[in-house]
Each structure stands twice: as C-alpha cells, then as structure tokens.
Image (cartoon, rainbow, N blue to C red):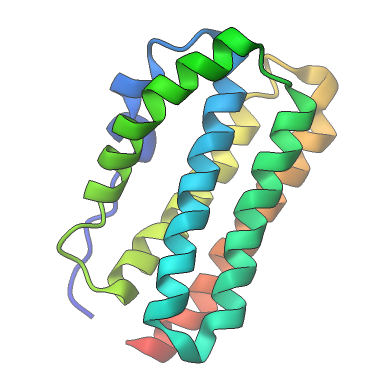
Length: 156
C-alpha cells in the first residue's frame, strides 16, 4: 500500500470546534460520529465482501452518538449551533480522505477511531461523574479501530 498521511483530526477540525461552548462539545462530537457512520456505509458498498463488518462499524458510530446525546442532552440553542457547524466540519473531514482509495481511507479511519477514543478520555476531566461511560465510548471506538486493523492487511 502506498503511504497514507494520517491527519490529526483535532487540529484539522479545530476551526470548527473552537467556537463551541464546552457544554455543547460532546454533542458536536456526537454529530461527527454520525458523519463517520456515513463514511462506513459508503465503504460497505465499496468493499462488499466485508459489508457486514464495516456496517457494524457504522452501527458503533451511531451507538456512540446515541449514548452521548443521552448523557449530554443538548439544548435547542446548542443543537442549532452544532447544526450550523457540522456541514463545514463534515466537508473538512471528508477532504482528509480525498484522493485516497477506499482501503487507504479506511486506514485513515482506523487511526481516527483511536484519536476519537482519546477525545472521549479528555472529557473525563470536565465530566468526572461520566468516567465509566466515557471509558465505554473509548472502548467502542477501539473496537472499530481493531476491526479495521485486522481487515486492512487482507485488502491491500
């Protein structure tokens, strides 16, 4: 496989994340998880032999988003703010995958899952009462990363 440049998604998305109040940040992250779920659904079509496993990754992204929305219910104001940010953040996120094959894109995503696991860990300082739940979110992220790490060598 050719070299794949793995972006730091926190830095890449910083311009979109910086204007979000702390209490809306988990909801914003949940919506980014939904964006990743959409990517997985595309890859499931691109790699039909592994459709089920890839769709399981999409389901995990949606599960994370559902859990976060239940843990940190957003106000109407925060929903509106995030809705105004997500289209540009999604474009920035998708651009990181541009010019790569689906297998290379999934290589990037495997790393993005590990970055996502770390993002949930950073929230523990702000929400110590949610430590166990945030650990669970990280574990879900890592499940998808591990799946991709096992799958990708068989595809290259």
